[in-house]
Image 1 (tube, rainbow, N blue to C red):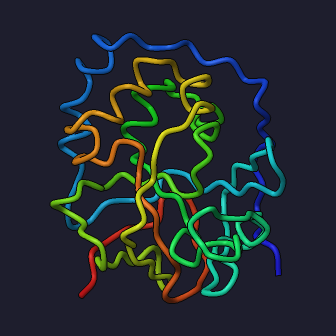
Image 2 (cartoon, rainbow, N blue to C red; image 1 turned 180 degrees about the vertical axis):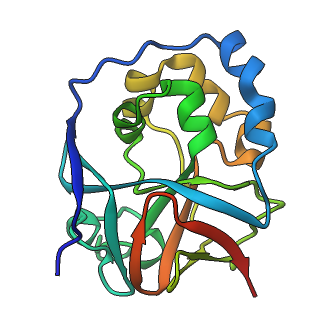
Image 3 (tube, rainbow, N blue to C red; image 1 turned 45 degrees about the vertical axis):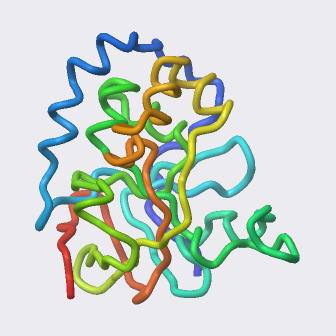
Length: 200
């Protein structure tokens, strides 16, 4: 079954004004103040093919497929011996507050980051060490993995060199400004606005 509820198809052609380091640093306190116990799902995005994003009102998480309809299962990984898709990198998760800080309030522009889940939640290493679990909506549960999620040249091209440099700083890594990797533990439907909460 594919995910459903496509809101908009987004391609790499969207132009985003590159924020300066001063602009980003001035807004970083907002990212630091994200909730640690109960937050929300701001955006779900699937990548049906390279260079294309679909912003979803509703989607489906699956323990085998990850986000249903996303191309994770066709993406080779340099971190597996046979270059098969890495099971601990099913989902890329980023802070919705940081996405808004570097891309503005156009959520289609957020989708250029290439992550599937945009959470209003504290994603820092201290708040969510590997093994932490988050429930999204009524059923779905994801688990933070130990695989690092790093910025790349595409991220710099879309959001600017200053944003790219910041995610590689020590503070950027501790806050996980570029986000984290996760896998699906319990599948289920999710939709924008769903509650996100820590679970044991």
